[in-house]
Image (cartoon, rainbow over the protein chains, first blue to last red):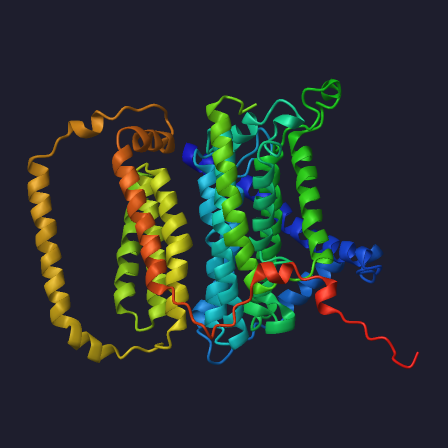
Length: 337
Length: 198
């Protein structure tokens, strides 16, 4: 009986996370088009609904009703599994993300490791999609993407090692608790270079501009998902935006205090205590999502060899150097603050 | 039957199934994918034993990095349909020899170890917290520090030797020097030609 109750409770909490998440993804695509439109002096979507607000719903309907075309010489099984392999890890990670002080689906001890392990899995979707399509463009795209993701994953992991060293815990709630105090106790201050590297590596991991060589349309049409249509394409699309939101929320958890209020430790804090932690977390996350979209509107695409150079020769040495400094500061008891 | 046992049976059956698929599938990419799944499933089995750190590291290192490179290489090869039957017969004696040797090793190990096992070895470990990861880290950096450092050195040697073995400087290689490229300025690239008649 207790077990059934537990399962139902977990199911409900999963639904509470997943259903709004899909809606958020839909409206992130809308806001992306609006924001980039604004930056390029255009209007963005305007026709469907008031100021284009129903556009994402129209897009979803269109994608669902389209036919999934499978190339004749493609490996059918892998061709259809690849989009799922892309989407599943990015959904799974949400099970350990603390959305507020009280709401987390599964508060596991090794949450940080779990996140690292799962984000490293999404590369399979890209590689297998590229291989199974049996197309030159798709294959080139997936090759580029695989090399890029592996290069940046290392820098990303090391950036999180800094967080681990300061908080002394792999549990995400404990990492947030360790940052409490004030705005200056958040880890962005002692770990500023690592934070920048984490965010940039996150952009590279999600294959977003300016690191979107895997789908560089000027060279290889649409990269790894060139042969996909309909719902199969929609899953890649969904996974990309899911990862975008994920990297944003992870940045705010690891370096910007998660659901902690930014006014902690000041006079205003007691007046603002009615605001739930979830609101603060969402605000921080929205800022990062905005930066993602901003980058896409502003920066030209990196050249492939420059991406690899940046990952291996710039980011990795900086993370090593900064981890050494953090280690020394912890040894001398200047850190954690 | 409790839920742990059910999970164990489901995942170990799947594990055996994927392991068989690794060696029987004719397509090397399919073999590699099945190997990925088998790593994943064995990570679940480790998780059932309570070794959360090891199981997640197994996924992170083997599934997330090593197998990606493996797939990367295998996909480059153009041997989609390997000559299956011919290879089977050719390598069958070798396979049987390796199989027998491994079995002898395993049986020898089991007979010897279970007789003279020191059951107190596990109990003597100092447990400093509930977290599996913290305990493991503590042990690695105190009791087993020398072994840990040696393992690190061996890995470093591996990296260096891999680079030494594969690095060949090709004089015909048109390598771009990024520092030179970045430091290029307007003056180097742009030449304004004034009209000579004026």
